[in-house]
Length: 118
Image (cartoon, one colour):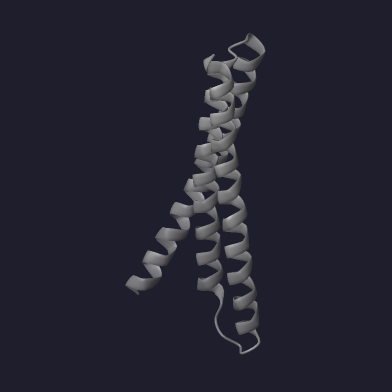
């Protein structure tokens, strides 16, 4: 009887991860349009664009965590060999995406830190 509950619960967690991506996308798009509008006034926009890249990376990483959690719960509720293989592949792919995104975010953060020290 736990199976339907786990399926529903994991669906809500997955939906929450998707909502994080949607919210982050709208927020970043809004900031991007503001920055583009400011570019007409010839302002230096490099730092602001780096901030946007940093922020969108944070939203993606946060959403990926919830999507992985949902996948794990789904596999627990239906632990067939095919589901385990799919889970393993999805976790590897999402972990690699998360790793490289976090490295890029870290690089952006260090770049900003160096610019502030100058």
